[in-house]
Amino acid sequence: MKVLVTGGAGFVGSRAVGRLLGLGHEVCAVDDLSLGREENLAGAAALGPFELVKMDVRSSELEGLFARFRPDRVWHLAANSDISKGTSEPKTDLERTFLTTYHVVDVMRRTGVRELVFSSTSAIYGDAPLDLPETHGPLEPISLYGAAKLAAEAYVSAYAHLFGISAWVFRFPNVVGPNLTHGAIFDFVRRLSRDKTRLEVLGDGTQTKPYLDVDDLLDAILLAVERPATPVATYNVAGEGMTSVKVIAERVREALGHPEAAITYGKESRGWPGDVPRFSYDTTKIRALGWNPRRTSDEAVFASISAEVERCRRSS
Image (cartoon, rainbow, N blue to C red; front, side):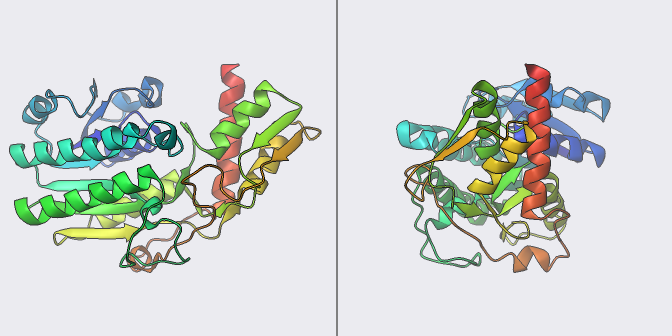
């Protein structure tokens, strides 16, 4: 089929493009390159029919692209992925997380595209009890990113019911792997590369969350979309186990070869306002389809640290 991937030059998006091309689909990646990078897609054209369109998905030109490319399915991955930025710049998530979604689903409505894969987040649950199922409520996000994703989920649901769209919604945990654009691993590697004597950690290091390898995430999505969405199918996706920020900091120090570097921690359990210091949720629904991650949380983190250290060394 023909698949349009928004945010296709980003971390998850570029890996999705590669997987979709490998499955024989024709792919159009749309990205404004604010976080995504063209080099993430350097080998895509060799895998199959592919094009990259540099465009903000809120642009009036998006409808023309839909009319030209005529996608069978949209993978909507474009969003602000820097949760802490939404606190310092509150409009960020309204514009880049919610309004991007609204514009994409409305263009789908107008052009007759009826299948949507939507990337949501564990942040919609807020600071809630652990091991939450998809049916947990009330949902009380504590970050503007989580709030924007929750509002976007609501719009996806309404458009699906009103306009005949089938939507698969996936609530991502902390996803890691090659070509990161943000997050603890990305930040720690760069901080310690700049100052080899000291690594500053936001929060007290006890923040503990499930991390998931990006290819395990894509396995889950590709498996789930083989099942019908009637009209919306929602899945929590997360790896086995959880990993603390303290473990990540110590592993980065080891991987960069600076064992003498001092790691300094903050006093609060949250890294920033809106951070959820500890969460896990129930993944029974996606596992019932036969999905199991190939890497545990720790394994995914350690592999991602190695990849990020190597990338940082190549670029220096």
